[in-house]
Image (cartoon, rainbow, N blue to C red; front, side, top):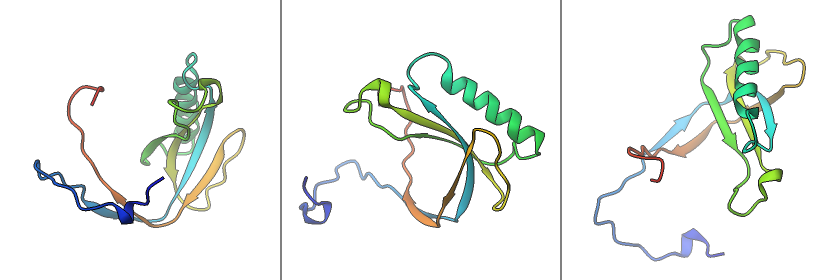
Length: 118
């Protein structure tokens, strides 16, 4: 694997830019879906998490989906996907859900317009 720091500068004929922005620390409640490419598991997890969040007045938080595994190199039966909602720090999570605390970080933001093939 080639380290990105050692790649030579490339041309950028389209003027492509990925703005970097700071994200604050945040806490997420999530439900993990194993084998997300089989059946309605992701939709069912999203529905269950929405019901959980709504019952606690937390449905207005930012919603996230995380695909942890690359299905081009991980067998589909081993892939995992998390459906998550941002919640106030210190909120208890009960049942089958998990809790994820993310530190403040910088991210590159890219907007993609067009069909999914992009």
